[in-house]
Image 1 (tube, rainbow, N blue to C red):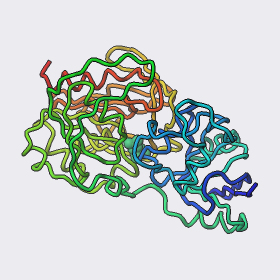
Image 2 (image 1 turned 180 degrees about the horizontal axis):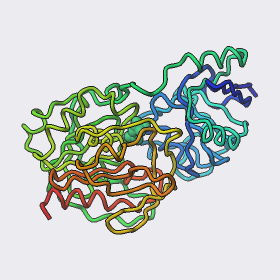
Image 3 (image 1 turned 180 degrees about the vertical axis):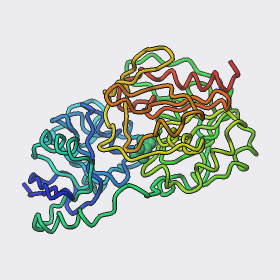
Image 4 (image 1 turned 60 degrees about the horizontal axis):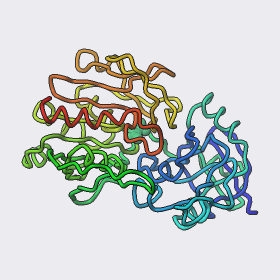
Length: 372
Ligand SMILES: NC(=O)CC[C@H](N)C(=O)O
């Protein structure tokens, strides 16, 4: 077994075994509390520049398959797990997690005390780190982590956005044993800004009657409005929302002219477009078990999340209503701007992975576009 080391910028080091590709990787070390869904997590483009630690101890037991990918390749730059199953066991599996990571050149580490690591990140904050299988001294790796540039000020969304617009009209796939869903005729033309979007969001838009034109992050408001869409969707994406070039101004000029629905980075950009502010959280929210309260209905949803920045509630006062709150730490989870027919959530109603409590938000967007 090849030795691997994880070194954090604050000087903490962990020894383990190599998982996936050999080599060295630098990124922000974060943790995710989902018990499964590791492939959806790895392929979520919002993980660009991040080394993801899975808090649950056993990963890889269902192997890897193309159907569980949220984008064509993993975007996390590294993976940290307590134990990676050597053997996959699932009818859809095509390879092991280790083989999948190797094939995509993703460096990982296993066999370390991930409970200690997660507690360390919770107490001291997410921070830059290095995973290496190259045999360098721990001190040299700590130095490398210290010199690495953090997430703040990084426009990573523009880099993962699509190069050209394309049309998306495919409903969610059904799995073996699932009833085929009734076909929904497309009623709404929606332009979706691709800041690094997850595929399921597009499927769920199609499922509620949208014909989706996906456009690159740098598309102007004039270009979007020229298509006369029924609605505009702002997707998730990696990096610092305040650094996404021109996005706040573009969205500001769309507001009031067309209904807008934003998820995660899209929610943060909506807040910036309204004149609000975003900030970097200590360790963020990543997992499939984040409790969120809908302030209008009083209902609590268990949600899937992946973000390290958040909207400052004081900064949106008088510009938007805070519609949802995180029950763990009281941070903003949703915004509503009725006058502009715009709303957004910080969490992931498309789940993937995670509970489907919040799927109704796609229907809410369809109703908003229908004027209901
Ligand atoms: N999933 C997302 O869209 C993440 C948004 C942003 N990059 C953050 O970390 O907060």
